[in-house]
Amino acid sequence: MSDVATDARAAIDQGRTAIGIELGSTRIKAVLIGPDYAPLAVGSHDWENQFVDRVWTYSMDAVWSGLQQCYAALVQDVRQRYDVELTSVGALGVSAMMHGYLAFDSEGELLTHFRTWRNTNTGKAAEQLSTLFGHNIPHRWSVAHLFQAILDGEDHVASIGYLTTLAGYVHWQLTGEKVLGIGDASGMFPIDIAVGAYDPTMLAQFDELAAQNGVELRLAELLPTIQLAGEPAGKLTERGAKLLDPTGRLRPGILMCPPEGDAGTGMVATNSIAPRTGNVSAGTSIFAMVVLEHELGRVHRELDLVTTPAGDLVAMVHCNNGASEINSWVGLFAEFAEALGVAVDASTIFETLFTSALQGAPDAGGLMAYNYLSGEPITDLHEGRPLFLRAPDSAFNLANFMRAQLFASLATLRIGMDVLQRDEGVRLDRMFAHGGLFKTKGVAQGFLAAAIDTPVSVGDTAAEGGAWGIATLAAFVAGRAPDQSLVDFLNHQVFADAQLETSTPDTRDVAGFESFIQRYIAALPVERAAVEHG
Image (cartoon, rainbow, N blue to C red; front, top):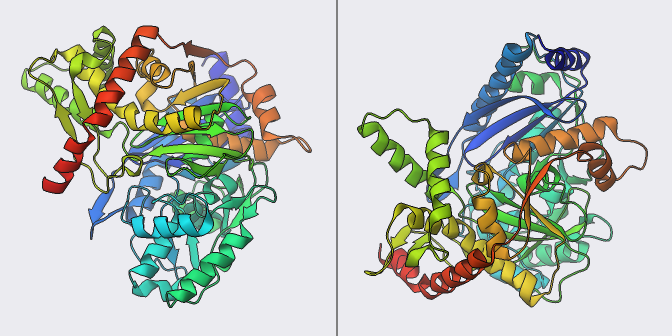
Protein backbone atom coordinates (compact mmCIF):
# COMPACT_ATOMS: atom_id res chain seq x y z
CA MET A 1 0.00 0.00 0.00
CA SER A 2 1.38 3.44 -0.97
CA ASP A 3 2.16 6.15 1.57
CA VAL A 4 -0.84 8.14 0.32
CA ALA A 5 -3.16 5.17 0.79
CA THR A 6 -1.66 4.48 4.23
CA ASP A 7 -2.30 8.07 5.30
CA ALA A 8 -5.86 7.88 3.98
CA ARG A 9 -6.47 4.64 5.86
CA ALA A 10 -5.21 6.23 9.06
CA ALA A 11 -7.52 9.22 8.57
CA ILE A 12 -10.48 6.87 8.03
CA ASP A 13 -9.62 4.79 11.10
CA GLN A 14 -9.28 7.93 13.23
CA GLY A 15 -12.47 9.60 11.95
CA ARG A 16 -10.61 12.60 10.47
CA THR A 17 -12.95 12.51 7.50
CA ALA A 18 -16.31 13.82 6.34
CA ILE A 19 -19.02 12.48 4.06
CA GLY A 20 -21.19 14.56 1.77
CA ILE A 21 -24.25 13.05 0.11
CA GLU A 22 -26.18 14.89 -2.58
CA LEU A 23 -29.46 13.78 -4.13
CA GLY A 24 -29.26 15.22 -7.62
CA SER A 25 -31.83 14.95 -10.37
CA THR A 26 -30.37 11.85 -12.02
CA ARG A 27 -27.81 10.61 -9.53
CA ILE A 28 -27.33 10.31 -5.79
CA LYS A 29 -23.66 10.74 -4.99
CA ALA A 30 -21.56 10.33 -1.85
CA VAL A 31 -18.02 11.63 -1.40
CA LEU A 32 -15.64 10.85 1.47
CA ILE A 33 -13.02 13.56 2.02
CA GLY A 34 -9.88 13.50 4.16
CA PRO A 35 -8.20 16.07 6.42
CA ASP A 36 -6.90 17.95 3.36
CA TYR A 37 -10.47 18.03 1.89
CA ALA A 38 -9.40 15.92 -1.09
CA PRO A 39 -11.80 13.12 -2.14
CA LEU A 40 -10.78 9.71 -0.81
CA ALA A 41 -13.66 7.61 -2.14
CA VAL A 42 -16.98 7.96 -3.92
CA GLY A 43 -20.24 6.10 -4.31
CA SER A 44 -23.25 6.75 -6.50
CA HIS A 45 -26.66 5.51 -7.52
CA ASP A 46 -28.53 6.49 -10.67
CA TRP A 47 -32.20 7.34 -10.43
CA GLU A 48 -34.79 9.23 -12.42
CA ASN A 49 -37.92 11.23 -11.70
CA GLN A 50 -41.39 9.99 -12.64
CA PHE A 51 -44.31 11.91 -14.11
CA VAL A 52 -47.20 10.82 -11.87
CA ASP A 53 -50.63 12.49 -11.95
CA ARG A 54 -49.04 15.25 -14.07
CA VAL A 55 -46.44 15.92 -11.36
CA TRP A 56 -42.68 15.40 -11.62
CA THR A 57 -41.81 13.40 -8.50
CA TYR A 58 -39.66 10.79 -6.76
CA SER A 59 -41.12 8.30 -4.31
CA MET A 60 -39.79 8.23 -0.77
CA ASP A 61 -39.03 4.54 -1.26
CA ALA A 62 -36.77 5.55 -4.14
CA VAL A 63 -35.12 8.17 -1.92
CA TRP A 64 -34.17 5.65 0.76
CA SER A 65 -33.28 2.73 -1.49
CA GLY A 66 -31.14 5.13 -3.54
CA LEU A 67 -29.40 6.53 -0.46
CA GLN A 68 -28.70 3.05 0.86
CA GLN A 69 -27.25 1.86 -2.45
CA CYS A 70 -25.20 5.02 -2.81
CA TYR A 71 -23.77 4.68 0.70
CA ALA A 72 -23.08 0.97 0.15
CA ALA A 73 -21.16 1.84 -3.01
CA LEU A 74 -19.09 4.35 -1.02
CA VAL A 75 -18.32 1.74 1.63
CA GLN A 76 -17.29 -0.72 -1.07
CA ASP A 77 -15.00 1.87 -2.69
CA VAL A 78 -13.33 2.53 0.68
CA ARG A 79 -12.88 -1.23 1.22
CA GLN A 80 -11.32 -1.74 -2.21
CA ARG A 81 -9.02 1.28 -2.04
CA TYR A 82 -7.81 1.07 1.55
CA ASP A 83 -8.74 -2.39 2.86
CA VAL A 84 -10.67 -0.89 5.77
CA GLU A 85 -14.32 -0.95 6.83
CA LEU A 86 -16.03 2.44 7.03
CA THR A 87 -18.03 2.59 10.26
CA SER A 88 -17.86 6.28 11.22
CA VAL A 89 -16.63 9.68 10.11
CA GLY A 90 -15.97 13.03 11.75
CA ALA A 91 -18.92 14.78 10.13
CA LEU A 92 -21.74 14.21 7.66
CA GLY A 93 -23.81 16.46 5.44
CA VAL A 94 -26.82 16.04 3.16
CA SER A 95 -27.69 18.11 0.13
CA ALA A 96 -30.34 17.79 -2.55
CA MET A 97 -31.96 19.54 -5.47
CA MET A 98 -33.36 22.84 -4.25
CA HIS A 99 -36.90 23.97 -3.73
CA GLY A 100 -39.95 21.89 -4.48
CA TYR A 101 -42.62 20.81 -2.05
CA LEU A 102 -42.71 18.15 0.65
CA ALA A 103 -45.75 18.47 2.92
CA PHE A 104 -46.23 16.34 6.04
CA ASP A 105 -48.96 16.07 8.65
CA SER A 106 -48.36 16.39 12.40
CA GLU A 107 -47.48 12.68 12.58
CA GLY A 108 -44.78 13.00 9.94
CA GLU A 109 -46.75 11.30 7.15
CA LEU A 110 -46.30 12.58 3.60
CA LEU A 111 -49.58 14.14 2.45
CA THR A 112 -49.09 14.31 -1.30
CA HIS A 113 -46.52 13.55 -3.99
CA PHE A 114 -43.13 15.19 -3.55
CA ARG A 115 -43.26 18.01 -6.11
CA THR A 116 -39.81 18.71 -7.50
CA TRP A 117 -38.29 21.91 -8.84
CA ARG A 118 -39.18 20.68 -12.33
CA ASN A 119 -42.90 21.34 -11.96
CA THR A 120 -44.15 24.54 -13.57
CA ASN A 121 -47.85 24.29 -12.78
CA THR A 122 -47.60 27.05 -10.16
CA GLY A 123 -47.73 30.02 -12.51
CA LYS A 124 -50.84 31.62 -11.03
CA ALA A 125 -49.51 31.33 -7.48
CA ALA A 126 -46.06 32.63 -8.41
CA GLU A 127 -47.56 35.64 -10.18
CA GLN A 128 -49.86 36.59 -7.28
CA LEU A 129 -47.16 36.15 -4.66
CA SER A 130 -44.57 38.10 -6.66
CA THR A 131 -47.02 40.99 -6.95
CA LEU A 132 -47.99 40.82 -3.27
CA PHE A 133 -44.43 40.66 -1.94
CA GLY A 134 -42.72 42.91 -4.50
CA HIS A 135 -40.23 40.05 -4.68
CA ASN A 136 -39.82 37.50 -7.47
CA ILE A 137 -41.30 34.15 -6.46
CA PRO A 138 -40.27 31.47 -8.98
CA HIS A 139 -42.53 28.59 -9.98
CA ARG A 140 -40.43 25.99 -8.15
CA TRP A 141 -40.28 27.66 -4.72
CA SER A 142 -42.02 25.86 -1.89
CA VAL A 143 -44.30 28.80 -1.09
CA ALA A 144 -45.49 28.89 -4.72
CA HIS A 145 -46.39 25.19 -4.52
CA LEU A 146 -48.21 25.74 -1.23
CA PHE A 147 -50.24 28.67 -2.49
CA GLN A 148 -51.07 26.89 -5.75
CA ALA A 149 -52.40 23.98 -3.68
CA ILE A 150 -54.54 26.50 -1.77
CA LEU A 151 -55.82 28.04 -5.00
CA ASP A 152 -56.60 24.58 -6.37
CA GLY A 153 -58.51 23.65 -3.21
CA GLU A 154 -56.38 20.58 -2.48
CA ASP A 155 -57.64 18.67 0.53
CA HIS A 156 -54.21 18.00 2.02
CA VAL A 157 -53.57 21.67 2.83
CA ALA A 158 -55.76 21.55 5.94
CA SER A 159 -53.59 18.77 7.41
CA ILE A 160 -50.13 20.29 6.86
CA GLY A 161 -47.94 20.24 9.95
CA TYR A 162 -44.51 20.67 8.35
CA LEU A 163 -43.04 21.80 5.03
CA THR A 164 -39.49 21.17 3.92
CA THR A 165 -37.21 20.41 0.98
CA LEU A 166 -35.73 17.06 0.01
CA ALA A 167 -32.45 17.82 1.82
CA GLY A 168 -34.38 18.99 4.87
CA TYR A 169 -36.48 15.81 4.84
CA VAL A 170 -33.52 13.44 4.68
CA HIS A 171 -31.69 15.38 7.42
CA TRP A 172 -34.83 15.26 9.58
CA GLN A 173 -35.05 11.50 9.23
CA LEU A 174 -31.35 11.04 9.98
CA THR A 175 -31.19 13.37 13.00
CA GLY A 176 -34.73 14.14 14.18
CA GLU A 177 -33.96 17.86 13.62
CA LYS A 178 -36.37 20.03 11.58
CA VAL A 179 -33.72 22.45 10.34
CA LEU A 180 -32.51 23.78 7.01
CA GLY A 181 -29.46 25.65 5.81
CA ILE A 182 -30.24 29.25 4.93
CA GLY A 183 -29.37 28.77 1.26
CA ASP A 184 -31.96 26.02 0.84
CA ALA A 185 -34.43 27.86 3.07
CA SER A 186 -34.20 30.89 0.79
CA GLY A 187 -35.76 28.72 -1.92
CA MET A 188 -38.72 27.98 0.30
CA PHE A 189 -39.61 31.54 1.30
CA PRO A 190 -37.94 34.97 0.98
CA ILE A 191 -35.24 35.77 3.55
CA ASP A 192 -34.65 39.02 5.43
CA ILE A 193 -30.91 39.21 4.79
CA ALA A 194 -30.31 41.65 7.65
CA VAL A 195 -31.40 39.16 10.30
CA GLY A 196 -30.99 35.83 8.49
CA ALA A 197 -34.62 34.77 8.94
CA TYR A 198 -37.79 34.38 6.89
CA ASP A 199 -39.12 37.85 6.05
CA PRO A 200 -41.70 38.57 8.79
CA THR A 201 -43.69 41.09 6.76
CA MET A 202 -44.10 38.67 3.87
CA LEU A 203 -45.01 35.85 6.27
CA ALA A 204 -47.86 37.98 7.62
CA GLN A 205 -48.93 38.90 4.09
CA PHE A 206 -49.02 35.24 3.11
CA ASP A 207 -51.11 34.24 6.13
CA GLU A 208 -53.60 36.99 5.30
CA LEU A 209 -53.76 35.95 1.63
CA ALA A 210 -54.30 32.32 2.62
CA ALA A 211 -57.14 33.38 4.92
CA GLN A 212 -58.74 35.32 2.06
CA ASN A 213 -58.72 32.04 0.14
CA GLY A 214 -60.34 30.11 2.98
CA VAL A 215 -57.26 28.61 4.67
CA GLU A 216 -56.21 29.55 8.19
CA LEU A 217 -52.54 28.88 8.92
CA ARG A 218 -49.37 30.38 10.33
CA LEU A 219 -46.70 29.69 7.74
CA ALA A 220 -43.86 30.49 10.14
CA GLU A 221 -44.88 27.46 12.24
CA LEU A 222 -44.75 25.13 9.23
CA LEU A 223 -41.26 26.01 7.96
CA PRO A 224 -37.89 24.54 9.08
CA THR A 225 -35.65 26.42 11.52
CA ILE A 226 -32.91 28.27 9.62
CA GLN A 227 -29.23 27.59 10.31
CA LEU A 228 -26.05 29.12 8.91
CA ALA A 229 -22.98 27.32 7.60
CA GLY A 230 -20.71 26.29 10.47
CA GLU A 231 -23.51 25.76 12.98
CA PRO A 232 -23.99 22.18 14.28
CA ALA A 233 -27.29 20.71 13.08
CA GLY A 234 -27.67 17.64 15.25
CA LYS A 235 -26.16 14.18 15.21
CA LEU A 236 -26.90 10.98 13.34
CA THR A 237 -29.33 8.97 15.44
CA GLU A 238 -29.42 5.21 15.77
CA ARG A 239 -32.54 5.16 13.59
CA GLY A 240 -30.86 7.44 11.07
CA ALA A 241 -27.75 5.27 10.90
CA LYS A 242 -29.86 2.21 10.12
CA LEU A 243 -31.81 4.14 7.48
CA LEU A 244 -28.56 4.98 5.71
CA ASP A 245 -26.80 1.67 6.35
CA PRO A 246 -29.18 -1.25 6.98
CA THR A 247 -26.18 -3.54 7.67
CA GLY A 248 -25.82 -1.83 11.05
CA ARG A 249 -22.09 -1.12 10.63
CA LEU A 250 -22.48 2.67 10.54
CA ARG A 251 -22.31 4.03 14.08
CA PRO A 252 -24.65 6.80 15.30
CA GLY A 253 -23.48 10.03 16.92
CA ILE A 254 -21.84 11.57 13.84
CA LEU A 255 -21.96 15.39 13.84
CA MET A 256 -24.05 16.82 11.00
CA CYS A 257 -24.02 20.19 9.27
CA PRO A 258 -27.15 22.08 8.16
CA PRO A 259 -28.71 20.46 5.07
CA GLU A 260 -28.29 22.57 1.95
CA GLY A 261 -29.56 22.77 -1.60
CA ASP A 262 -27.45 21.94 -4.62
CA ALA A 263 -27.07 25.62 -5.47
CA GLY A 264 -25.39 26.33 -2.14
CA THR A 265 -23.12 23.31 -2.30
CA GLY A 266 -22.14 24.30 -5.82
CA MET A 267 -21.05 27.69 -4.51
CA VAL A 268 -18.88 25.97 -1.91
CA ALA A 269 -17.47 23.51 -4.45
CA THR A 270 -16.31 26.40 -6.62
CA ASN A 271 -15.32 28.83 -3.84
CA SER A 272 -17.94 31.31 -5.05
CA ILE A 273 -19.07 32.67 -1.69
CA ALA A 274 -17.65 36.20 -1.71
CA PRO A 275 -19.25 39.22 -3.46
CA ARG A 276 -18.44 39.61 -7.19
CA THR A 277 -17.91 35.86 -7.54
CA GLY A 278 -20.25 33.43 -9.20
CA ASN A 279 -20.63 29.90 -10.42
CA VAL A 280 -22.54 27.87 -12.95
CA SER A 281 -23.79 24.38 -12.13
CA ALA A 282 -24.80 22.22 -15.07
CA GLY A 283 -26.71 18.99 -14.77
CA THR A 284 -30.35 18.16 -15.47
CA SER A 285 -30.98 21.83 -14.82
CA ILE A 286 -28.45 24.62 -15.26
CA PHE A 287 -28.16 27.66 -13.06
CA ALA A 288 -25.85 30.54 -12.23
CA MET A 289 -25.32 31.96 -8.75
CA VAL A 290 -23.82 35.44 -8.45
CA VAL A 291 -23.01 36.89 -5.02
CA LEU A 292 -24.17 40.51 -4.97
CA GLU A 293 -22.56 43.58 -3.44
CA HIS A 294 -25.96 45.22 -2.96
CA GLU A 295 -29.65 44.66 -3.70
CA LEU A 296 -30.89 44.83 -7.27
CA GLY A 297 -32.56 47.96 -8.59
CA ARG A 298 -35.88 46.27 -9.28
CA VAL A 299 -37.67 42.94 -9.42
CA HIS A 300 -36.89 40.70 -12.41
CA ARG A 301 -38.83 37.51 -13.08
CA GLU A 302 -35.67 35.97 -14.59
CA LEU A 303 -33.72 36.41 -11.33
CA ASP A 304 -34.29 34.72 -7.97
CA LEU A 305 -32.90 36.28 -4.83
CA VAL A 306 -31.50 33.58 -2.58
CA THR A 307 -28.49 33.34 -0.27
CA THR A 308 -25.13 31.67 0.15
CA PRO A 309 -24.89 29.03 2.91
CA ALA A 310 -23.47 31.87 5.04
CA GLY A 311 -26.51 34.09 4.40
CA ASP A 312 -25.23 36.63 1.84
CA LEU A 313 -27.49 37.83 -0.98
CA VAL A 314 -27.27 35.96 -4.27
CA ALA A 315 -28.91 36.50 -7.65
CA MET A 316 -29.79 33.16 -9.18
CA VAL A 317 -30.55 32.46 -12.82
CA HIS A 318 -32.24 29.07 -12.79
CA CYS A 319 -33.09 27.20 -15.97
CA ASN A 320 -35.10 24.00 -15.77
CA ASN A 321 -33.40 22.39 -18.75
CA GLY A 322 -29.70 21.65 -18.81
CA ALA A 323 -27.81 18.61 -20.09
CA SER A 324 -30.57 15.99 -20.29
CA GLU A 325 -31.19 16.45 -24.01
CA ILE A 326 -27.46 16.20 -24.74
CA ASN A 327 -27.41 12.97 -22.75
CA SER A 328 -30.22 11.63 -24.91
CA TRP A 329 -28.31 12.37 -28.10
CA VAL A 330 -25.16 10.80 -26.68
CA GLY A 331 -27.24 7.73 -25.86
CA LEU A 332 -28.41 7.58 -29.48
CA PHE A 333 -24.84 7.71 -30.77
CA ALA A 334 -23.89 5.00 -28.27
CA GLU A 335 -26.72 2.84 -29.57
CA PHE A 336 -25.49 3.38 -33.13
CA ALA A 337 -21.96 2.35 -32.14
CA GLU A 338 -23.34 -0.78 -30.49
CA ALA A 339 -25.32 -1.62 -33.63
CA LEU A 340 -22.05 -1.45 -35.57
CA GLY A 341 -20.50 -3.87 -33.11
CA VAL A 342 -18.12 -1.23 -31.74
CA ALA A 343 -17.53 -1.42 -27.99
CA VAL A 344 -17.07 2.13 -26.71
CA ASP A 345 -17.55 3.29 -23.14
CA ALA A 346 -19.84 6.24 -22.42
CA SER A 347 -17.06 8.60 -21.33
CA THR A 348 -15.25 8.14 -24.64
CA ILE A 349 -18.44 8.88 -26.59
CA PHE A 350 -19.03 12.03 -24.56
CA GLU A 351 -15.46 13.21 -25.03
CA THR A 352 -15.47 12.48 -28.76
CA LEU A 353 -18.77 14.27 -29.40
CA PHE A 354 -17.97 17.25 -27.16
CA THR A 355 -14.50 17.69 -28.67
CA SER A 356 -15.95 17.63 -32.17
CA ALA A 357 -17.91 20.78 -31.32
CA LEU A 358 -14.63 22.72 -31.14
CA GLN A 359 -14.34 22.31 -34.94
CA GLY A 360 -17.81 23.74 -35.58
CA ALA A 361 -18.64 27.12 -37.05
CA PRO A 362 -18.71 29.90 -34.43
CA ASP A 363 -22.52 30.21 -34.74
CA ALA A 364 -23.09 26.43 -35.11
CA GLY A 365 -23.50 26.76 -38.87
CA GLY A 366 -27.06 28.03 -38.75
CA LEU A 367 -28.34 25.00 -36.80
CA MET A 368 -30.78 25.50 -33.93
CA ALA A 369 -31.82 23.36 -30.95
CA TYR A 370 -34.09 23.64 -27.94
CA ASN A 371 -33.37 21.34 -25.00
CA TYR A 372 -36.77 21.80 -23.33
CA LEU A 373 -37.78 18.48 -21.83
CA SER A 374 -39.87 20.40 -19.31
CA GLY A 375 -41.29 23.89 -19.05
CA GLU A 376 -38.93 26.87 -18.93
CA PRO A 377 -40.15 29.90 -16.94
CA ILE A 378 -37.42 32.25 -18.21
CA THR A 379 -38.80 31.91 -21.74
CA ASP A 380 -42.39 31.67 -20.44
CA LEU A 381 -43.06 28.09 -21.49
CA HIS A 382 -45.17 25.90 -19.19
CA GLU A 383 -44.14 22.70 -20.98
CA GLY A 384 -41.25 21.69 -23.20
CA ARG A 385 -40.66 19.88 -26.47
CA PRO A 386 -37.05 19.10 -27.44
CA LEU A 387 -36.44 20.34 -30.98
CA PHE A 388 -33.66 20.33 -33.53
CA LEU A 389 -34.03 22.73 -36.47
CA ARG A 390 -32.07 23.58 -39.59
CA ALA A 391 -32.56 25.60 -42.70
CA PRO A 392 -31.95 24.04 -46.14
CA ASP A 393 -28.67 25.93 -46.41
CA SER A 394 -27.43 25.23 -42.88
CA ALA A 395 -24.03 23.54 -42.54
CA PHE A 396 -25.26 20.21 -41.19
CA ASN A 397 -22.32 18.20 -39.84
CA LEU A 398 -21.36 16.56 -36.56
CA ALA A 399 -19.26 19.48 -35.30
CA ASN A 400 -22.03 22.03 -35.86
CA PHE A 401 -24.68 19.66 -34.52
CA MET A 402 -22.84 19.18 -31.23
CA ARG A 403 -22.03 22.87 -30.97
CA ALA A 404 -25.73 23.69 -31.43
CA GLN A 405 -26.66 21.21 -28.68
CA LEU A 406 -24.08 22.65 -26.29
CA PHE A 407 -25.06 26.23 -27.13
CA ALA A 408 -28.72 25.30 -26.54
CA SER A 409 -27.87 24.01 -23.06
CA LEU A 410 -26.49 27.49 -22.24
CA ALA A 411 -28.96 29.67 -24.13
CA THR A 412 -31.62 30.21 -21.48
CA LEU A 413 -28.91 30.86 -18.91
CA ARG A 414 -27.51 33.55 -21.21
CA ILE A 415 -30.93 35.24 -21.39
CA GLY A 416 -31.05 35.49 -17.60
CA MET A 417 -27.43 36.59 -17.30
CA ASP A 418 -28.11 39.42 -19.75
CA VAL A 419 -30.67 40.79 -17.29
CA LEU A 420 -28.12 40.63 -14.49
CA GLN A 421 -25.08 41.90 -16.36
CA ARG A 422 -26.58 44.34 -18.85
CA ASP A 423 -29.76 45.60 -17.17
CA GLU A 424 -28.50 45.65 -13.57
CA GLY A 425 -24.83 46.29 -14.33
CA VAL A 426 -23.64 43.53 -11.98
CA ARG A 427 -19.91 42.93 -12.29
CA LEU A 428 -18.10 39.64 -11.86
CA ASP A 429 -14.45 39.19 -10.94
CA ARG A 430 -14.59 35.48 -11.61
CA MET A 431 -17.02 32.77 -12.66
CA PHE A 432 -16.52 29.11 -11.83
CA ALA A 433 -18.21 26.11 -13.37
CA HIS A 434 -18.91 22.60 -12.16
CA GLY A 435 -21.02 19.60 -13.02
CA GLY A 436 -20.86 16.83 -15.56
CA LEU A 437 -21.17 19.17 -18.55
CA PHE A 438 -17.65 20.44 -17.80
CA LYS A 439 -15.88 17.09 -17.42
CA THR A 440 -14.53 17.26 -20.99
CA LYS A 441 -11.86 19.90 -20.61
CA GLY A 442 -12.07 23.12 -22.55
CA VAL A 443 -15.35 22.53 -24.39
CA ALA A 444 -18.49 23.56 -22.47
CA GLN A 445 -16.23 25.70 -20.28
CA GLY A 446 -15.05 27.72 -23.28
CA PHE A 447 -18.57 27.98 -24.70
CA LEU A 448 -19.85 29.28 -21.36
CA ALA A 449 -17.08 31.89 -21.31
CA ALA A 450 -18.24 32.99 -24.77
CA ALA A 451 -21.92 32.96 -23.78
CA ILE A 452 -21.47 35.33 -20.83
CA ASP A 453 -18.28 37.04 -22.11
CA THR A 454 -16.53 36.33 -18.81
CA PRO A 455 -13.53 34.14 -17.92
CA VAL A 456 -14.66 30.77 -16.58
CA SER A 457 -12.57 28.58 -14.28
CA VAL A 458 -12.90 24.88 -13.52
CA GLY A 459 -11.15 23.23 -10.58
CA ASP A 460 -10.12 19.70 -9.74
CA THR A 461 -13.35 19.12 -7.82
CA ALA A 462 -15.65 20.24 -10.65
CA ALA A 463 -16.78 16.73 -11.49
CA GLU A 464 -17.42 15.86 -7.81
CA GLY A 465 -19.66 18.93 -7.55
CA GLY A 466 -22.18 19.37 -4.79
CA ALA A 467 -21.45 16.12 -2.94
CA TRP A 468 -17.93 17.39 -2.35
CA GLY A 469 -19.37 20.81 -1.45
CA ILE A 470 -21.63 19.45 1.30
CA ALA A 471 -18.78 17.25 2.59
CA THR A 472 -16.71 20.42 2.89
CA LEU A 473 -19.53 22.16 4.77
CA ALA A 474 -19.63 19.18 7.13
CA ALA A 475 -15.86 19.46 7.65
CA PHE A 476 -16.34 23.19 8.37
CA VAL A 477 -18.70 22.39 11.24
CA ALA A 478 -16.34 19.76 12.66
CA GLY A 479 -13.15 21.83 12.47
CA ARG A 480 -14.28 25.45 12.52
CA ALA A 481 -12.10 27.88 14.47
CA PRO A 482 -13.90 30.37 16.76
CA ASP A 483 -15.60 33.13 14.72
CA GLN A 484 -14.11 31.78 11.48
CA SER A 485 -16.12 32.78 8.41
CA LEU A 486 -16.93 30.41 5.57
CA VAL A 487 -15.09 32.69 3.12
CA ASP A 488 -11.94 32.56 5.27
CA PHE A 489 -12.21 28.78 5.69
CA LEU A 490 -12.52 28.22 1.95
CA ASN A 491 -9.84 30.71 0.90
CA HIS A 492 -7.16 29.79 3.44
CA GLN A 493 -7.76 26.11 4.14
CA VAL A 494 -9.71 24.40 1.39
CA PHE A 495 -8.66 26.26 -1.77
CA ALA A 496 -5.28 27.64 -0.70
CA ASP A 497 -3.43 25.41 -3.17
CA ALA A 498 -6.24 24.78 -5.62
CA GLN A 499 -5.35 24.22 -9.25
CA LEU A 500 -7.68 26.02 -11.67
CA GLU A 501 -8.00 25.90 -15.43
CA THR A 502 -9.41 29.14 -16.84
CA SER A 503 -10.94 29.74 -20.25
CA THR A 504 -11.05 33.32 -21.45
CA PRO A 505 -13.71 34.32 -23.98
CA ASP A 506 -12.64 33.70 -27.57
CA THR A 507 -13.75 36.70 -29.67
CA ARG A 508 -14.95 34.48 -32.54
CA ASP A 509 -17.00 32.32 -30.19
CA VAL A 510 -18.42 35.40 -28.43
CA ALA A 511 -19.63 36.73 -31.78
CA GLY A 512 -20.84 33.27 -32.80
CA PHE A 513 -22.86 32.80 -29.63
CA GLU A 514 -24.34 36.28 -30.04
CA SER A 515 -25.55 35.28 -33.50
CA PHE A 516 -26.87 31.98 -32.16
CA ILE A 517 -28.79 33.58 -29.28
CA GLN A 518 -30.45 36.10 -31.58
CA ARG A 519 -31.69 33.26 -33.80
CA TYR A 520 -32.67 31.29 -30.70
CA ILE A 521 -34.88 34.10 -29.42
CA ALA A 522 -36.33 34.76 -32.88
CA ALA A 523 -37.29 31.07 -33.29
CA LEU A 524 -38.93 30.68 -29.86
CA PRO A 525 -42.40 30.84 -31.49
CA VAL A 526 -41.55 27.50 -33.14
CA GLU A 527 -40.96 25.96 -29.71
CA ARG A 528 -44.20 27.47 -28.41
CA ALA A 529 -46.08 26.05 -31.39
CA ALA A 530 -44.61 22.62 -30.68
CA VAL A 531 -45.87 22.83 -27.09
CA GLU A 532 -49.31 23.97 -28.21
CA HIS A 533 -49.75 21.44 -31.01
CA GLY A 534 -47.33 18.60 -30.30
